[in-house]
Image (cartoon, rainbow, N blue to C red; front, side, top):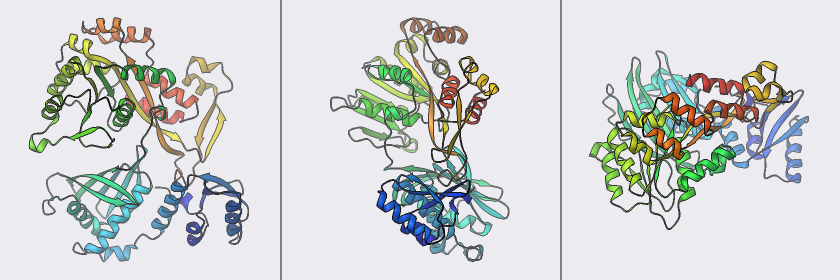
Length: 482
């Protein structure tokens, strides 16, 4: 992980006092991040303090106050990591130092907006990596002697068996990291050099996302909202793990949740808690799986039901019949694209006429890293790049592409946060009749394209044309789907 952008020469006490962070060099001047809540007088006072430590030729970039303070705390925490000599003295029974080390790892991961933490033992060290904006990056390396104590400490928190180190285990716990309440889902597995642990971090207080923030263009959003306006039927979100399906469905729920509706969700785990909605967790270990809990929900007089994921034929059938009996059912499943949802339901042995009658439409999505707005630069697209962007761009000489040059806010990656590329497939009456006949995929794709369906790759290229992501990021997504 590249933290060099957070190491500009602002003294630690001054970083916290102002607060301020060195962002990046721009020619011969240093661009410094200051809180966006500062007025002109406060900015002048901050620049005066920087000038007192020989930082006189600086430019100012305004950064949201909370994000800036978290980056300052992360930078200072990174500078105070225990030395190898101190860590080498930690034995498995020394709970205090190990607890501090685990807390420090979690604090740093949360401050960097990580979704997952990987504790990976190697022959001579333990590597801690975090997943930020969908990409893994290294957080720290520690001596191999602390690998087992770290995992044991996490297993204690997750109420797991610390003696059993050969079999996979799952656990969960809640903690406070970087001042936030975090739910942690933990899984361990034995490797050649010890147990590996992966932690999924769920921020219980994270800000909700509005439908307009998902990244759908106007046409796709209009189709999606039209589907949600229905009083019955099934709407499916499709895509690989980590594509943002849950976020999209929860945005939809918040959009249609009214006091006149009884809305229930069935999830494993419950990730978002929305006031006014009945959240029901799945617990396979006690026989309360998706199918069993879904039958129970349907006896609770629901108007809208969200099924976190359709994993088997039984759940698919119950969901289809719920949609046909007057409920609006939202769910997700793994399929390559929106039309692939139909063939996935066929594979689950749902009769074609039931698929045609119940399915309102599908949304396929992928997440792409967004160009960092704090270090974005633009350049003219080359002829080859215009050809990649499509026929409409070839004769257009003024297309400008964005890229991030690297700064403290993105830790030199050039990307910060993510944006969705969406394919929204609303089923017309003509398509419904064709679906009931279980057609060959080619026929269904041809009719859908005539109805205006746009591929998810084309939507992603449109994001690149708009300067929200890069061609390299789109190529990575398209290559993954190839």
